[in-house]
Length: 64
Image (cartoon, rainbow, N blue to C red; front, side, top):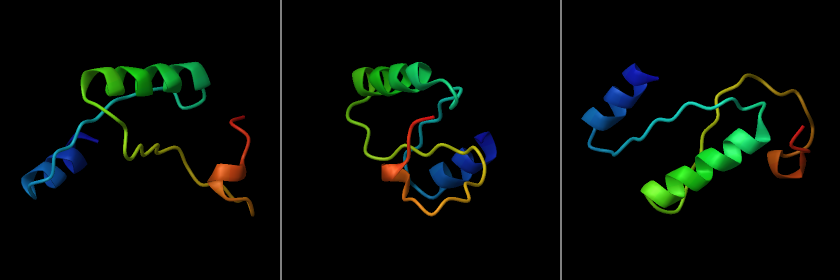
């Protein structure tokens, strides 16, 4: 994460990295609230977890 963040920063783009347990919905909500409180509205949130083999779009999936 740090290496990728450095590469992006070196290209002139601001990067903020945070770590959270993506299996814990409450923790993710708390993280978004903290980011919005400290920095401002969240425009993009990337969660790196793995591969989902599902025919539904991410917006139609259950949180579980």
